Length: 155
Image (cartoon, rainbow, N blue to C red):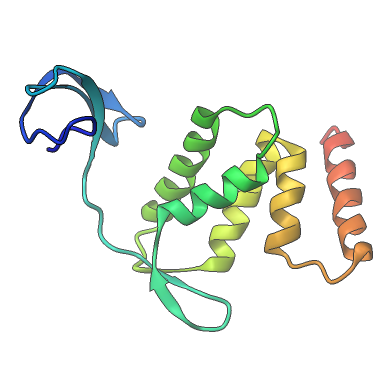
């Protein structure tokens, strides 16, 4: 592994531990060239999954796309990076647990919205407005009314 600071090709592992709810190994490394430390994560390579888009196109599943969407929805909200990473981890884990080689983008969007709704209502509405492609303010307001009703409903 190349040192991210100096590019030296050798390092030593100074600490290893489980991370990401046991789905990864976190390693602290020390460059043998410059002596600086850096962290790497090691994941099991999972079976590739294909996302079926609403227009029928198929593309490889990319965790980063989910992460970017969640980060955009959570921008300027009191939500830490760890919380957002945990949401991405849960979404990805749930999708893999389905055991399907293909998943619809609609299913992914619904799972993300459910996660965001329990995390932060503003982030949820932001994500839903892009994901559901509201045609006008009436649809947007209807979504807000539904959200207000579910958050005040004791059942």
